[in-house]
Amino acid sequence: TVTDAGAGGILVNTATLDASGVAASGTQVDGGSTTIGSLVTTTNVTGDGLRLDNVLGDIHYTNLDIGNDSGTGLYIRDADGKAGSFAFGTDGGTINTTNGTAMDVDPVALDVTLSSVTSTNAAGAGIILDTVSGSVDIGTVTVTNAGAEGVSISNSTATTTIDTLDIDTTGDEGVLLSNNDGSFTVNTPTTIT
Image (cartoon, rainbow, N blue to C red; front, side):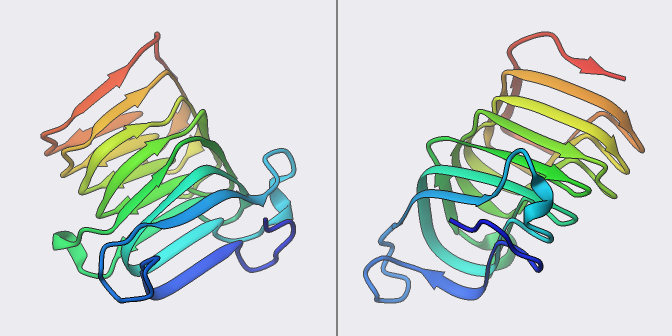
């Protein structure tokens, strides 16, 4: 658990996540139940919430809660670029990001279930999924005052499901779907204003 931080919550740069201790053996890391910041008082963590940059391997959480301000909630970049196979998953959790993008993931194999994802006042898009595969179920999605798209999904084969989608005021499209072979489903009526 990270309660208060002035320069980001959990930041991992240039690493192989492998539970065996042998690089690239393919053994999944158990992230357990992890809380970064506060879902109510997001300013307790300033900067990125969980940043996995230039990573390889596989990590899965039983629950992941991220509350942060002035950064990206969940940021992932595969060290092998577009051809990479970094795997990330969580069985539950919530992301609440103020003054930033809630999710920026490119490229990753996902197995993600979240109850809600919220982005408020992002300079760019509220949620960015680029070159992702697997399964993404992100529950109730709320994006307010995004400088670019509310939700942007591109070059992806993932099955993406949203229970409720509420997008209020964006600089570009409310939802941008580009060059995808996967599916995108919203289970209840959508509000885009």
